Amino acid sequence: MRKPRRLSNEQLAPWVWEAQNLSPKKPALAKSGEPDSASLPTEEGLGKVAARPPVTPIDWAALFGNANPTEIEVGTGKGLFLLNAALARPGTNFFGIEIVRKYQLYAATRYAIRNLPNVKTTCSDAKVILRDFVPAGSVAAVHVYFPDPWWKARHKKRRVFTPEFAADAARAIALGGRLYIASDVEEYFGVMTAIVGAMPAFKVRPEEEQLAAPRTEAGFATNFERKALETGGSVWRAVYERTPEPVTVVADPVV
Ligand SMILES: C[S@@+](CC[C@H](N)C(=O)[O-])C[C@H]1O[C@@H](n2cnc3c(N)ncnc32)[C@H](O)[C@@H]1O
Image (cartoon, rainbow, N blue to C red):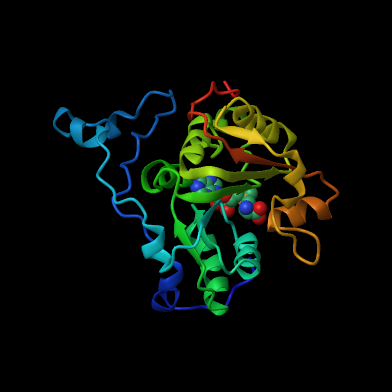
């Protein structure tokens, strides 16, 4: 990764949001697939491990200092999509969730250098943020571009896009809002569309497919999209509208 200009934590602070009281981790699994006995909770600690600590839901108006609509990107990587989106749509707030700290800080640095007022980032697991911190119906869109495919069968449970994740995204998106997805992995794209396609809370919007992300002048929207297109790969994309139907957790197509 090319090193961006280094900014101090104080300089980056306006572009960084830290989650408080994240849920405790699940016990680690030993090779056998059973929980590692060293990480099993003691009887005394059982309640503590099982219970989710109370969290304060994000107040978007307070966080951004305005009542503009907010959109979330999951897995921002180096932050190119949010950079272009925030520049192109100053009347929308953008919140990026990235699990790897060095990528989050790289992206935050890009926004700080341009002094962008309408974008913030957090270094967290997007599944947890959507489940525990984002108020229901509070965002105008969720964008998920080129999520990690985790090729090996035994690693697929690490994928971010699961039926539970899709349900949490549906809860977060306001009625009439959008879910944007793209991938260069046909099989994973098929899984995502199978999940969302089975949810009455979403309706596919094929006519909006090409709007799934604002393109740069060079014709790509994210770094991974650029890599896919440069190597002659295909990119699949879809856009869904949040309907008034109830949110359901559908059967997992990856089992
Ligand atoms: C393949 S990269 C794509 C990055 C960017 N969206 C793009 O298209 O260039 C996937 C990104 O998702 C991040 N990621 C993976 N799991 C995540 C999770 N559970 N929560 C948030 N980010 C995650 C990875 O660290 C990585 O930066």
